[in-house]
Image 1 (cartoon, rainbow, N blue to C red):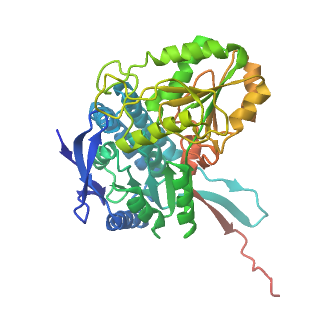
Image 2: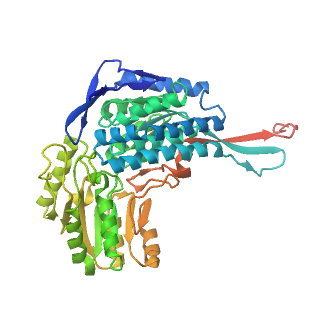
Image 3: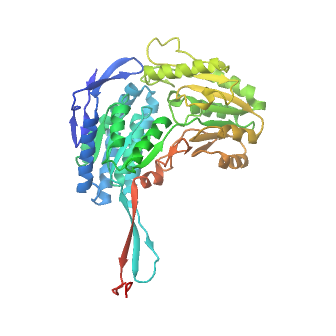
Length: 488
């Protein structure tokens, strides 16, 4: 059944001022499942003004941190109470399999709980200064935070930004992806039910070039947090420079997995499949470049391609599905074009490359494996963001490290070896923000997330996540009643 959703501004559910709407598609069926407001710059301004008024009034930023924590805990519990509804929305709007959506909703609830606990753990410091002074620091919220989230993890990416910023006392304007806004708009109902004051959280929908651009240029916004493509991230940095807005950017990745010849081959196959094809490869940290030591290369390739054939593709609502569709028709064509590019560049496609024969509708694409690649090829250099993996052999440890680092990105990497000494030797040499050893992808609310080089600026999650939403103020109190005597 098609549903109508509204944007959430100043504690109320409202249409776009222009009356414009957009349709939302289920990528597994290509059917319209919802109509949402098509937010425009005037809606952005209304949301920012509401957040600014709420912040300046102190209705959220100046209350006791323990009271903020209680509201975050309530919201966490409401996610659990509405677990099934949120899972259904994620599956229908994004296309991911049910078990992936279940993980996302559970982790989102945990994230609100984690930062609810941190709300009362924001500490300043006292300093040893010369006699007659009492000096200390305090941590304060930044102000109005613009948050722009992608379509691959619609609910979880929203919560990664909302939870720490709200725990710190900020007010926010969240712009959802124009493709997958439904779970965040449903979350708005729970935010209202949890008791957040009006204007503290505002959620809008709309195109990035329209809505996102208005948000990043708005003079009343103090910070921008963005997850998405590197090119867009660079444009946001330029916009932020106009008023020196703080920025946190979690951007693209072209991530390597290094497979040494002493690994447990079956376990490594299992994890590298997950690295490449979880969420249909639509993951910034996807392990889409696999480097295999030469004396196990043939065995690895044979097992890997054989295992790809066992990945069950279909509508995420069905039981036993491992991989759902790509998120949209446009993205499907983009990924298909990269497969054409790989073939044209001379790489060898061992499997995949097309729609599964049993699925006539939906944006489904088979797991696709390329070999005989080199680092001049676009499929090695550029982020494809789909179920496409390139496997390449190496001889020595030094060569593997050089190949892994030969990229403009630096988000994540995996190492597979039974020799923990080798792992400890290799991992400091990998220029990236996240390294897994003998597994891949698990993410923890307690650990910082972010990358080196063109994979972004700053970190989300963990203590770093809340630090990113705080300012530091130096305070000095004169305890000496004597005059300064400077002009005597």
